[in-house]
Image (cartoon, rainbow, N blue to C red):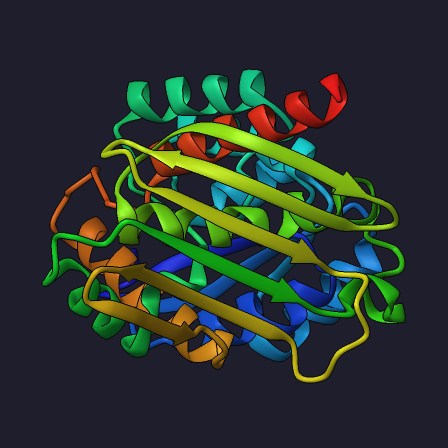
Length: 297
C-alpha cells in the first residue's frame, strides 16, 4: 500500500471495466488504479492512460505492482487468474459468476483460504442503500411464505456486448442469475435446492428455488427483451401482505460502497466478508443445478 491507499490492479479492459471498475477504483479515496492487464496491449493502455497506471499484457507484472486485483474478465479466465493472484497474496474483487463451473470455483476458494486474502464479490444490488433498507423490512417479519423476481433487459440484443462471448453463451442465467439468486437468498433464507428450471429460446429462464425454511421463490430472467429501462423487480409475500422492491439504481454508487467495505476489511486484516468468494461458490452451485435441470428436460 501507498500510505492508506490500496494499489489496485484491474484485469480486463472491456465495457464493464470502462463503465464501472476503472472509474470507481480511480475515484475512491481508499484505492488507486495502479495497473491494467489485458490480452491486447492497446486495450490496457487505453484504460490505464487517464489514471497514469501501468498497462501490461503480463499478469505477473501486474501482480508485482499492486496490493489487490479487481477482475472484469470472463468467468473461465477469472477463476485461474484470481487463484494466481491469491497465491501471490493479493486481495480480490471478483465478478459474478465467480468461475465457469463448480470445479473452477472450488479451486479458487481453496486458493483463497490457503492465502487468507480478502475477497468481495461484485453483487452490486447488495451494496445499495435502498436494498439494505428493503432487506431490513423483510427481516423484521418472520412469516413470509415466498418471493419472486423479474429481470428483463435488452442487454444481449444491444451491440455494446456483442463481443462478450460468455454472456451470449451463458445468457441471463450466467450474467444476472447470481444477482437475483443472491438477493432472494438474502431475503428468504439460504437456497437449498433448485425445484424447477425451464429455458425458452432465445433467452428466457424460469426458475423456482427452495429455501431452507420451506419457502419458495420464483425468478424470471431475460436479457433478450428490448425494454428500456430494464425491469428489476423483487417482492416477498405472506399473510401480512406483499412487500415489493425495485432494484434499479446506479451501479457506480454501489461499487463505491463495495470498495468502502473491501478496503475496510483489508485495513482490519479481516479475511471473511459476507459477500466473499464463498458466496460466489454458493451461487455457482445454484447456477449448475439450474443448468442440470434444463439439460435433463
